[in-house]
Image (tube, rainbow, N blue to C red; front, top):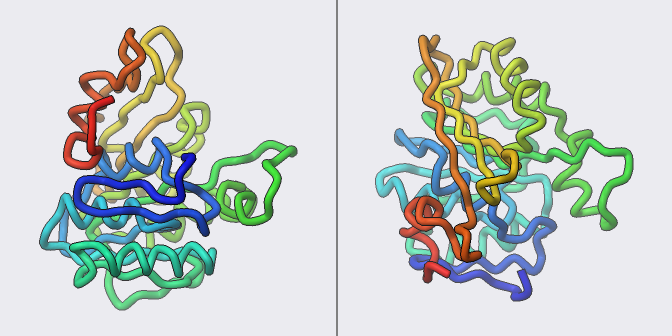
Length: 236
């Protein structure tokens, strides 16, 4: 994003001090992921984008955001304080691996780190934000299984090529796939991302959907526009 902030319909996200800027992945998960229940946890909240989207979608929920990046947490706190949802959303500097709240969450959302290549992007904070070696999937999923209510939902967005590994790890931790949405940038390309929703309750079937982001004319596709209509200011 060229600007230091990104304005949505009901709130504004400043992200100049965050390693990971407002991007399509976060917006997709914030608009698609489950936001049911009274208590929602956003793991790796960054600028607070997904936490605030969850607050907008569920007007009754209390949302907790946690992150290990001190600068991001401070900026998320400022974004939250300036939003209409400041009475229900909090963000703290906290590692999910040592996070021990007094409750179990009805919903957990996470746009997790996923760089696994030997060559990573330059910049220490960005590496921390996106390097899978800092928060490996097995550790993340194990913690989610402990923090999630028995009837809760866990939603993530990850690269499509890592989905089978992620699903297998979730199954090993008692989390069953409920919904899968494969995301294509354009219709003639293979899925680039996949959004997954899990629950501790055993499932007999999985809801399978597809989402294409870009229409033939280069604009947002009708499906993408509909999914994000309550957030983006325009349909371009």
